[in-house]
Image 1 (cartoon, rainbow, N blue to C red):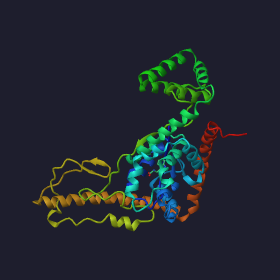
Image 2 (spheres, protein in one colour; image 1 turned 180 degrees about the horizontal axis):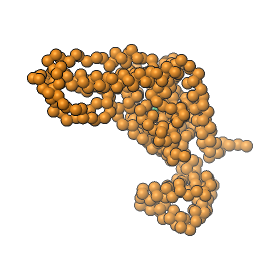
Image 3 (cartoon, rainbow, N blue to C red; image 1 turned 90 degrees about the horizontal axis):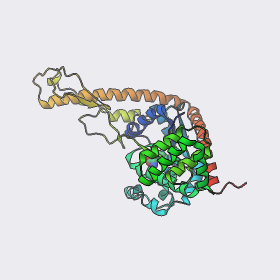
Image 4 (cartoon, protein in one colour; image 1 turned 180 degrees about the vertical axis):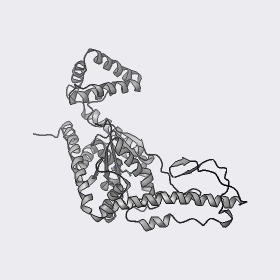
Length: 399
Ligand code: TRP
């Protein structure tokens, strides 16, 4: 079993671009081998800004999933689903809205930023204000421990942590919590009980984070604990209630790097279409051929630059070139050409492989429908487990 669970979502608001591929998808493909991963189409989030153009969302949903698959996201390793097909997200969003101070939402920096950026849209809506809370529900309902996001999303993860803490504080204090926590400590056994108490007071009295981590590690290693006692002990460590919801961490996605564009003005990764299933010609056009090598420098030139960065790696290109009296400008052009063609070749090869993978799904749409149906079912099972605990904690499990 994996110790960490990863969850991330993408809004279906149009076709994917290069930034999605280099910034996000490559990362997902890597993470799926290392963690238990859940990736989903955030269609409700798309509606918060595109409520008046639902057709855009409808069109993008399946294309987006095909693009994920084409990029190498593997449904045998990661669970893929659509947010609106797991209605439990909405229930958790509603229940958490009861304890969410308005000021917290208004102070999330993306709120004002996006309203200003998308000034052509009226975003003074209830749904848009609640965007970060819906995102919190997405994350907390799976008890995800890590959320791969870009820097712009970090405040949303911070917000999610605060909501989880507030929830645990308010609802984790079942009647007799302290007594039950003490009884659970006793059950740890002499040596471990003492260690737990000591680490807990080091954290609570001196803010010693290392002590907190050791205590958490110790609990993780302890096997013969009931689920309830485990939650109590985790909660009691930090001074909150039972840990019903898990605080996630942001896993920062490195900024995207563009291959094959050395020396050219870097294309904007958020507008350049990505070489996906549907747009081979558009993207081929973007990878425009560079000017032919000037005759005068068709022969190799000596270049002193030790290494050249292209693709997403730094590589030394063998500099066995002999000058033939070319000017610096000609020399530069020659290199630009070399790098662009190398970069282009890689991009073209990758685009070819992706198109091939996508074609399978384009030819048989039921494949994609089935992948998503399976993913939704699996996601729903987990989400229902969390909702059972949440309803119980909030006094909603009448019998
Ligand atoms: N807000 C994210 C974005 O704009 C999309 C998203 C929605 C998300 N819910 C999420 C990302 C949960 C990570 C986890 O990119």
